Length: 202
Figure 1 (cartoon, rainbow, N blue to C red):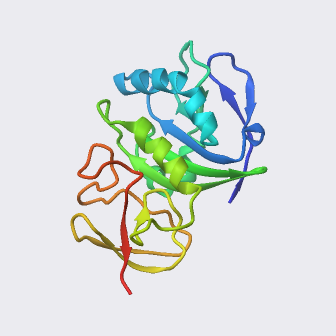
Figure 2: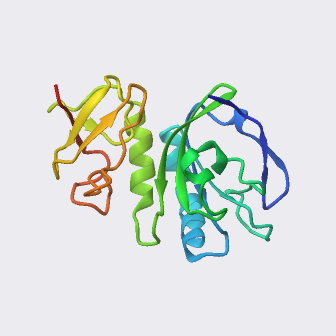
């Protein structure tokens, strides 16, 4: 768990203390602001503030680009400090496009999960909101299946009920989108990330 510190809004160059955000899920997109993906994401962030608030969800776009922007949803991260909190992105180029999910509690933030390479056509609003909703729920659905974004409460092997892929999770991990069939992905074969799809193998 990492202590929160002040970051900078790119638009105004004013400080934003993450500790002042409501407790809940913080989703941060990373990448170049000079991309079609960034334009699409930033516009949708601004259009969905009310939805995010109801889910105790805070959403930002973090970039190393020192450019002008009209959006207060963009944060300036010149050293890639936010991305560096995820081991996957530490090994990649500094404009790696991804969604970083964190749990914020008091003055601390904990990295939960990283979703790499969201695409322009990808329904990321459904994923981010689904993740936030599921993260509040510690119980499986009525069929005993676990959902994307929930926390693993029992270590062991789990079966993707859509494709049969088996993955091992540790207690405290977060159930991901299936890397084989993208079950849980709103553009994948299921109805969306709110559908449970991981089954514990006793």
